[in-house]
Amino acid sequence: MKRFNDEHTYKSICLNDDDGDGIECPLSGAEALVVCKEFASMTDTNTGLAMVMLQKNEWNLQCAVSAYQDSMQGKSKTSQKQTISTSDVKRVKCEPSITTSVPIDNKTNATTRFKVLSWNIDGLDEQENTIDIRTRGVIDVIKRYCFFSKLLLTDFNFISEEPDAVFLQEVIPITFDLIRNLLPDYDSYAGNTEGYFVVILTRRELFKVYNFEIIPYPGTNMGRNLLIVYAMYKNSIEIDLMTSHHESGTEDIASKERMEQLKLCFKHMSDAPSHRIVLFGGDLNI
Image (cartoon, rainbow, N blue to C red; front, side, top):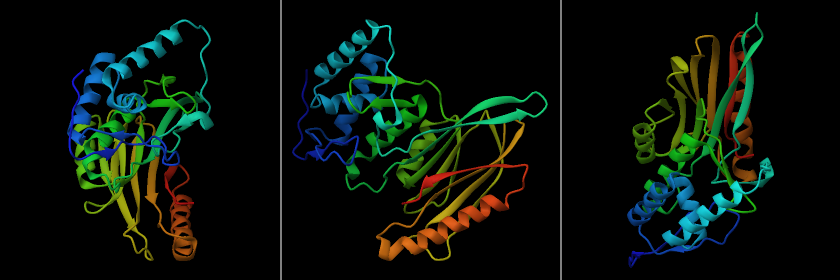
């Protein structure tokens, strides 16, 4: 296998910031993306999974592909499927997905499974040369809803359901452009256009969006705000989608402001008309 060399090395993206055992990657951001795409093509998966398997196998493509194939063969030999609990999920700074059942028709009492994903995608990460590959990994996860086992990185499940709505925090202009270009089935609404900001994505085939609103927090020192999208879901459910990234900092500095921001969010939720469903999620720093 051809090995790439670059005089500038960087730490590869860790799946969990608490691990503290990142493997140094000898590739530049562009080279790593090429290898991830090659893995995805060879295994018919995606670059999000590729990043995990390559990191686990010290960025050796052949070893990563072999490990993936071995894990899939092992799965096919057993008829008992392993259930991954919430505590066992290895995440990329990702909040758990939230699934909610809501009535579509009061007369028939029919229900639908609504899928919403909330994620701080860490756009302010200091490793600027990894922005492209990390964002493409985020996009692949949104497309495929790929979860990884915490105990064995080679043991994973796919749920091939795209979320109906996505709440993103710490989005920056570069990543926002990639998200809009590579997720054409979603409409996007941003809380700002400069610095870092929150974004709501809605699947175009499911939502008719009437309007969106950006509500600045009066006491913020970080430009934080509340983003609300007013929409109709499946031509039958009036729904308000809300996301926010609350004030960062220590308890002494930011705790009081976070509480005020949360109170404002609760007020907008409680003030919504009774016939509308309100879904709120984000990075509340609590």
